Amino acid sequence: MDPVFLGCIVLASQAFNAAMDAADRLSANPKARVEALKKMSQEREESHQEAMKKLKESQEEFESSSRRKEEEANERIRAQKEENNELIESHKLRIKNEEEKHEAEVKMMNQEHLLTVQKLKSESKEVKEKAEIEHKMKVDKMEKEYKNESESAKQKLEIARLEGKEKVAKVEKEKEELVQQRRKGLDEYVRVMTEMHEIYLKHSKEINDKNRQLKLENAKLRRKEISKENNKALEHIKHNYDQLLVQLTQQNSRNVLERFRLIANHAIPIHNSLKSIRDEFNPGTGTALTVDTGRLDPDFEKVREEINRFNFEKTNYTQYVMNTNLTDPRLFKTCSDFITQMSKLVGANELSLICSHMPRAIDNGKWEDARTYARMSTQLCEKFSALNLSLENGINQLTLDYTQAPEARPAIQQ
Image 1 (cartoon, helix red, strand yellow):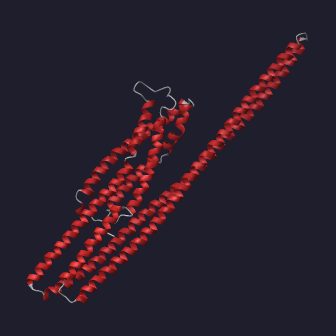
Image 2 (cartoon, rainbow, N blue to C red; image 1 turned 90 degrees about the vertical axis):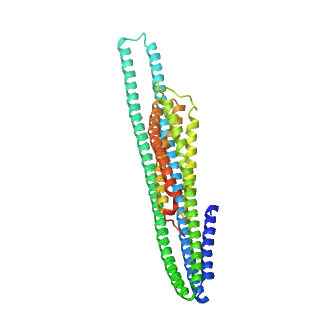
Image 3 (cartoon, rainbow, N blue to C red; image 1 turned 120 degrees about the horizontal axis):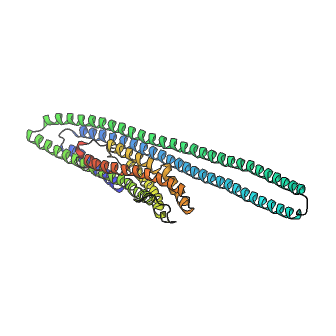
């Protein structure tokens, strides 16, 4: 459990207990009434805490299972892509070997024909022409057979590429379904948590109503001076308790936003690296023809590193929110929407292609392929730029809305 969250629980419990103790001291009614009120409050609190504990444990188990399934899907995608690449490379190598073999056979046949022609110098014209015709027929037959085999091999290569792409798409679809299920589960958790909070408030109101009733009955038995002092003391305790809740809610909002910033901060270096890649292929004087091998490797590595850090911070954020009890549902929903936008860009297939294929294209001098990935980086760069601006404005607005005047915001109190 987060230390800040644990501190909030302790402070809130102390404030609540202090209010109940004050009610005991100030009550002029018989002790049985006070004990009944305390028992009612205690039973309400214990039942609420137990229900919230079970809900949290259930959600944690669901999150753990969902993360495990998503990791398994990611591993299947990686393995399938690796298998696809190996199969395609195998087909390409087979085509290349057949081509080299064919060229060698044609070369050997031509050399043998030259030797035959030299031997037939003294022969008649008809004999020489017959030899030429036979040689041409053999060459044509060999070329035809090679052409058929080459076309067949290329068809197999294309089929392998398409089948591999379909397999990857199938697993990615399964992963997306898992992500949707996990998101729905989290939404359901928030819904149930909010509903339980409303029930908690309802029970609190019933206890408060009973408390007011006891105060009215006790007021008849007290002197006016004692009643005024008691009411003043109760208001003071209530004010202190309300102020404490305000401070705890405000601090919790700061903590949530700080954890959200840790996630959002990873979009900036990704944008910078994409901009560096884009600028390398789109300088002010025109399009670069070549890029030195390894020159952009730091940018590719930076993108991969920031993607991993993004996912790590996102997991920490989710766990933190699950373990907090004063998070405004609207703040949580707004942050979740931003995280969903970031996840779509960070997990975009184009970004994965740039990091995995563009370095090989540069190393192998495949500039057309490299420019294709560079165009992808340009598009992603623009999207990340817009995202960063949206995040900056969003965080500033959330800071104003939820940390400057928290007393105007209802909070989830567990």
